[in-house]
Length: 465
Image (cartoon, rainbow, N blue to C red):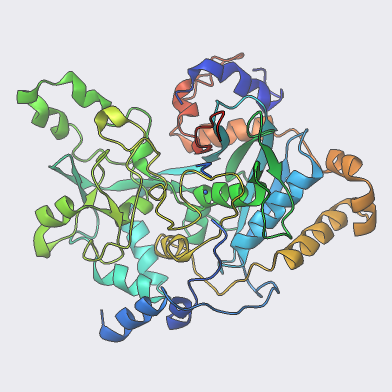
């Protein structure tokens, strides 16, 4: 693709390459049940965390005094309904995140995604970040019970981390990577940096017999439709930091080149090389990693497959299961590891969503954001208020009234969209983790880059469904 061309032409060129605050926070957690692949302690702290599983909180729809802000841009071809959907998805997250940062996201609609894929997130990445600095930033930003649990249950070494991979100890790892948005929340990147923090692709029509639902004011998503808002909220969470290094293209496939008697030789090559691990991965444990670390330390688990879970206390307490990787030949469950386990009802970050479903940010979604560096607040999701606020923002951006916006959706969308191909290219290059090939045409968008998209998918559709 030539610089300056539409990013959808990039997508088309890939076609066949794709194989695809404090205790108040704790009591406020189990809020709405609006959820996503496309498929129909100290004693008091422990007590408070137990209450999170049973306590609902009544909250207002007004915007918090301070919150993370989303600055969206939209590619040509994005409709006003779709623009409003992402403006609202950003507002939903803003109501839960108190950090004074701005997250810059570019959104594009396309008809060139693989079959069954409805959306993807390509986060801007801060690569080669010192584990020691990340850990110090977390320690200085403790505001919740989970923050304190994390602080009390860290790995022994302050400057490096250890992981278990397929039963092998992989230590002396000094660096990790994180999304730009996550780095902003931690103060490891200027919170007002104006460069792109991420890129989202959404399918124009989810499937031949499935349409998007844009009616956010009704709790009933019609059968045969896919809720646009739910998918938008899910994709934004990847940019916020819900990503795993296990989804690195080709991760652990090299071990198949070693025979059984030389497997240890392969794992020895990984020592000190886990710089693709993420903040989310620092809370990814397994019963085996806990066992091998014993009570004297806490090792994470970076294996494909197995039974990895989320824990804030060094693996002592299993809070919810993660998906274990797309590569089923290595033992993965077929879903990217940057998600909860499918059909676990854990939150917005399940890998599949079904028709007729609306999903919400739930307790564990929030707790992940908390421990990877975001500050939580008791935000609400009064969707009617968020829609009104989104329309007012867009109208103000155009120097028009909300009434004009409602009466002129096509013209409004044309005025609100722009080609940011060069900015997306720059974000990809600056991330330093994607398979970038210089040149024109399809040469530089190879499957390595494409595999880094964090997909949300449809379940299999049959004639009987």
